[in-house]
Length: 163
Ligand SMILES: Cc1cc2nc3c(=O)[nH]c(=O)nc-3n(C[C@H](O)[C@H](O)[C@H](O)COP(=O)(O)O)c2cc1C
Image (cartoon, rainbow, N blue to C red; front, side, top):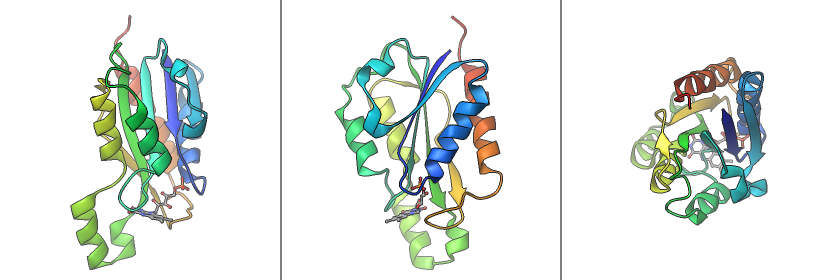
């Protein structure tokens, strides 16, 4: 299977998640992990699975992720490309702020709008949007999150239909 993991990262945590995913499936699949800034539409050719991830910044994906996805045509993923979205975020429980909890309930996180854009481009979602926790805004990742990311993408590729 040909897999592209497209990500953005400011402090390096989302990149670590993307790399853990790449390492997990590299032995059996053709997988590339690419920062959004290096993306070209040719990378979608013959693709089986597109995974897009972003840090959550002010309840949204980064501007680079938003503008890349908005720039894709409405049939960019229509050739049967399966899709999945993830973000990194801080745990509301750990921040312990009632105001932040209320805002999060209202405005959410990055993975959901990514998933929406992938669907707009006629991707075929293969999983619910998911997330991985950082301990603080610059990291580190919560213990075990790289392993969880590796397991998550392993399940996704196992779900892909054989052609
Ligand atoms: C300006 C700013 C805004 C942020 N907004 C949110 C937010 O709305 N929700 C959240 O859970 N985390 C928020 N965070 C924490 C980020 O999600 C965290 O920095 C990110 O997951 C780290 O990933 P990276 O190392 O790949 O940049 C914010 C961090 C910064 C610096």
